[in-house]
Image (cartoon, rainbow, N blue to C red; front, side):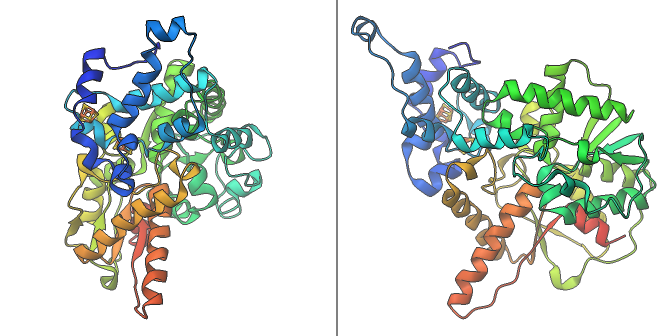
Length: 403
Ligand code: SF4
Ligand code: SF4
């Protein structure tokens, strides 16, 4: 294998270790050792350990559907990496492993292939088969955006098609603070994060080229996105298209900058009935970004602490680098939807135990996933004759409501 594998001594150490399994959300819900990081390393090791006898007997290592299912049963949260006893760099390794499988025709799962077909289809340009015209329908009549601007706001597919409240919140923040911005409108193509996650890098290159061309046409020096998946994907573009002539930042970085520069003034208090709030660190914004260079942990907390009426923020027992995935990462939904909802249920239960009335995140995927968990909890308690209320908000919603 030519992938960026850990060296063989690390692999042997891993096979005798197992230390990180208790932090793996997949293991926590399934109890299957084969789905832990060590289990997956074992399966990959089997691939590379074809011995002399195997060669003499012309045995092939068989990659079955079950094998593939195991490799893709992972949220790519990389909590295993932050605890790994031999420092295996899982944020690269899992991606490289999936890439290798795809290059050798062992994947990706059908659902991921279908998603790419939808992205390259000019009528959609998104993985969900939503009509292209829907991408800007929430704002095209209310905002007359310029053809060129300093900042391009790149909402991403989840925000554009489903979590459009987050999109409208961010448009309000940008407008009220006088930022010279535009969007790619219907020229925006899915960022390709799903391709990178499922090892489809040939396709990722095409997407990168398309979006970079569109951003450069707008002459922007900054691209801002509220989606940590888009953030990481856009930052990866430089590896595929060469130098980027713009910086890529997350909305929390931009909002924190605007607060520091005195350009963002709050005028309304956060509703008391929705307090206290708890902040969930999205894996891709926090831990994985930290493993790749700089994690965004402080900006969201700085922003929330600046909002009038918010006098304290509850913290999950495992937060920042140790944050537990909401269940919505890694394309796991396409492989095992029920498992993702079990992972989310824990996140909701812990918020209840902490006494929170609102769960805040800075990722539209986390918002959507946690909302599913909250609805499931409502149904569960309704069946017992109990009422349950929990708000789920993106940080951009909080800021926009307080302006
Ligand atoms: S901590 Fe690292 S070495 Fe140990 S089982 Fe987990 S991945 Fe393998
Ligand atoms: S990335 Fe997350 S889900 Fe995947 S093996 Fe590591 S801890 Fe488990």
